[in-house]
Amino acid sequence: MTTDIDVQLRDVTEADLEFLLAYEHDPEAVRRARFTPRPRDAFMAHWKSKILGDSTVFVQTVTVDGEPAGSIVAWWDSDPDLGERRFIGYWLGRPYWGRGVGSIALGLFLRRETNRPLYADPFAENTASVRLLEKHGFRPTGTVRYGDNEHTLLVLDVPDAQNIHDIQDSATS
Image (cartoon, rainbow, N blue to C red; front, top):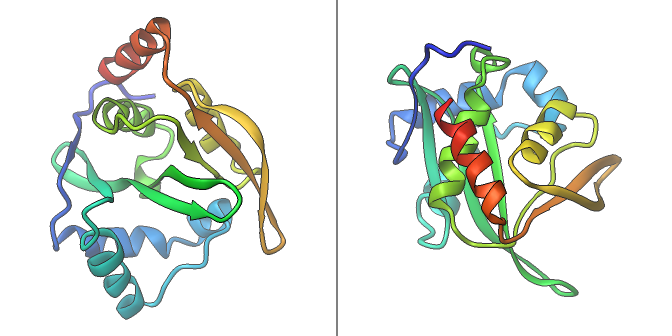
């Protein structure tokens, strides 16, 4: 893990969308996330209307040394049996994997996104993503299926003082 990088969060700009589109289409990222990438026009329409156009969605571009490295987003999901739940998701470009970028970015994001509980549901075999969430206080609560793929459902409840301290330390180290 590299410690001499500058990881920041900022609002998403229209120019970021081209980077995010390319990252979403990386074959290894698609395999790990079990996510079908959208064609360019559908991707742009989704981002402009469902993410940037929805005032209840909180989204940030992750930058590394000033360059767009990915995004982190929180949104409300409505389930007829479970009600409204706040979810997060993130996507980093492959050049930024394994360098501590995700850990720093998620720590920064969790300071800004204060809704709790907060849920995430990464593909179960994406162990790096599951570990990243657990490092930040998320705990597994079960599994969900999307088609043939099993995802781990994790939740971050109201953190205790030690978890807050740990999250702050990981975001600054």
